[in-house]
Length: 309
Image (cartoon, rainbow, N blue to C red; front, top):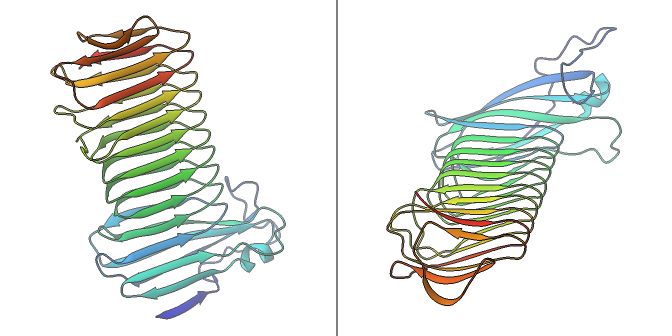
């Protein structure tokens, strides 16, 4: 493996008396752009670690990783002191911007990367910035704070964690674990099991397939849960919310066992229910059709609804 320490002197700004004013880099006045390219075999691993900056990745039809970015700081010296360390080999590329030990002023680095469509996004990490991926493969791990995460057209498992930001998943095939503390989670055309947790945001999920061997788990404290399942759905569901409604969209010919509870609201269903246990305004224990996977639904201060699609 060859290790390259990029000193980031490519394409410098002309730091004259007025410096390089930015439109929006968190108040930083100076920035320097950089650009590198390295070959990467199809299926090779790509990892990025940065701070105080966004990361945007997009797949293309070349066996090459094209890396563009900007490092910034409150002074030319502060911006220039940030270094991008790149370790590259035919089957892996690891990009890292180290946080200075003496961290003063607003500094950071952001990236825009093109990569082979089948590249494995092993570890993508930032802080105070969003992560966006269009086409890629996993298993992938994504971490940021104070930023949104958006993944589109991804194959493989995903482990996503952010705080103070939303998570959006579109056309993802694989097992997904998604967690945020202050943001909504939205999944559309998901092909695989989902575990989603949001402390202060809603969860919306539209499943394209039914992972029979894995449960769907959705949990939020202060937001609604809205789940749509496909025909021939056979996965169990556990959905909980403290202060938000739970809505489940089911196929007309659904077969399921429903166990639902709400403390201070009502439960309604478009389906005929065969009583198994208690059924009342606040509780429901029964079967739809011939019975099947368990739908465990619980909230405290909002209604629960079972709707026909």
